[in-house]
Image (cartoon, rainbow, N blue to C red; front, top):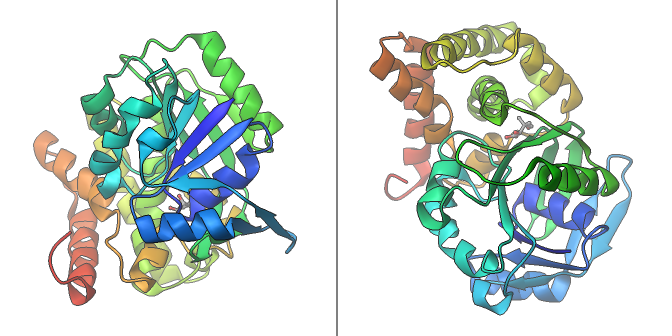
Length: 311
Ligand code: PAF
């Protein structure tokens, strides 16, 4: 099985180290030539939950044509990079291979489908907490489920999905499939809506949100608004989203959320694909979202304090 992972961030590092166990050939795609050369030379280091260091060598390139057709390509870039990264998909999927998004937020699938069509796409969520320490080095900071499914418009067969779920399990993931993957993506969206901006604004690790009641009150209000928006859109999210946020905070208590990592590294955040989408859909459907609007404004203001121009 030949696998390519687009995006050498925290999650990309975890994916490459774990999935190399089930791949005959594994590649990382990075849009930055300097970093791609560095990762090709240095490999990837992952500090495991029990503080062991795993090191693997990996092929890394910024040219998808160098790689050729893969069986599976995993999109693991930040949501605001999906449109550009999707341009790498055609040569990677040329042999009829599949592409899977494991990203935060909504809108990623649609941007991939705009380039390669929806027929060969899979979607999924991953609840692990992973912290990027430096280029090619990440710390696994909390376990979580991985759920894969066949999104609307895809022609991937259920047995193909089952094969990939088995391979993820063989690689060490607590992985299962879901019939309604769009609902699962929204379940995860609500987790990110509650955790990511609040940790980015307060600089608390995920577990800290449960200990600081002022932060938890805002998290709760943001998730409740997002739940109302999901219902208005007609998404069959799972019951008790706030309890899921609580469980992820506990399981990834030591982790810095991806948005806190972005703010600390002065990178653009995923706010537009998370709380920003709740605001946009709320406006469209007449659902009030004052808390998510304020959170979105605060994160945008924070980004403006270190980015030369709006992302
Ligand atoms: O974005 C993140 O950081 C992750 O999706 C999660 C699961 C909230 C863990 O930190």
